[in-house]
Image (tube, rainbow, N blue to C red):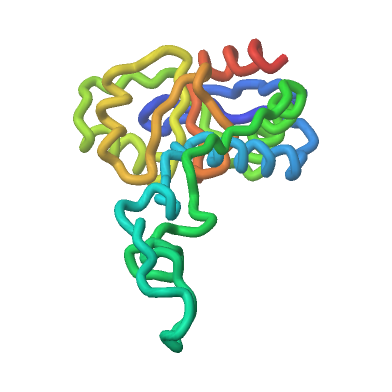
Length: 206
């Protein structure tokens, strides 16, 4: 099993923790992670964009000029796509961009993302995360002790002080084990996780 150092919030070493080899020592599958990232980003799209076709644009009922004899190209409506103010040909309409990823691939992608962080020594395991206040300044000071200002912070249970302290810091996000996703793991530099959260991750993905 891979081992990593256990820290307190003052960045002091307080011991070691063993990580599950099946989750944090998994053979990284880049294809699975790519599929999950594409799926995540696609699922964020609202798909509400809409343009009007020539049948939906107001006006244009009258033929602008007679068919023949004017020397100009024949036109049937001033709301055809080639006219200013006309309808849009083949424009976007409301649609869903969602696509499903099967459970097996999701698990492979999650294990691959966690293992990639472990392999790059970008995991920081905390004994506990209990800042005394919700002040952003205090939370930023905690991160600076670990030499990072770009991190995903994962806890087992909601920690109101941590959430409020981190939310105004750019490139820092807090999340729960239950809402953890591959995109966030790969997006942020450091993966800061509490010991309780590690146990919960290993329980869920064992």
